[in-house]
Length: 328
Ligand code: FCA
Image (tube, rainbow, N blue to C red):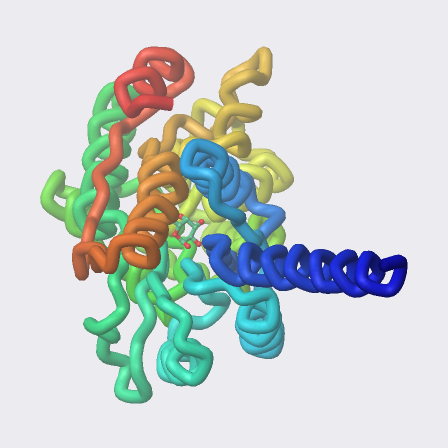
């Protein structure tokens, strides 16, 4: 009898364990991989992705992937943890084919966010659903807003240098700055007054260094414009201008993003050269992409192939209203 009891207990234990394993395998697990985890934009994306996970009861695995090695290890880890899919903003869009191959090897679904993956020939990989921003159009919003503010301040355009913080190896970055230049030119800004300032990486420090060179080499300008792919780029340029003695009313910097980096700047007691930003939606990019992935895994409903989100100009005068209108 005692023996039989032991056996039934052991069998019961085994069944419970097997059930637990089966449950862990059934559980929906989604990775969210971002290239620059320290950047407030990506923190916000993660925050909204977490919200989706809480609401739907799935597990979200957040991993920072600052380089190609980290990307490949992260995908290995996701597979080992029995995840079924992941969303990625890659540190280099040219990793596209490698990412797609690795995901296929493990039967993981993959979606990209912000930066669209490209193949060996530099062509966007259509088979990977993507959510990005309408880069050129948002760039035009930046350029038009600069032109308008420049006119309001009564600047002579011939005396203004426009620093283009560039990161042309990333298509969305190039489209953003191209859009800004086109809008400025359309408003009568002289093409010769653009100064290209290439960034080695898309963060404030690299933008600072690039802008510093641009300003030092162009002492003839009285006033400055600064634009780039994100708020960090423009903040770098604004800090560099301050360092070179440019007063805040002699520079108009307009970024793209609108997360904490911009909010901190607007919260400062005195106005700085960071005049505004085009607010984009971390909620759509974090919450919606994750939810799309969840429905893809759970119900086989594949996400739209391409979604491009819009933005709204935000300055220190209308921060609360614009954030509200964007649902933030
Ligand atoms: C790119 C930029 C980020 C953010 C995002 C929407 O990934 O590097 O700063 O602007 O697009």
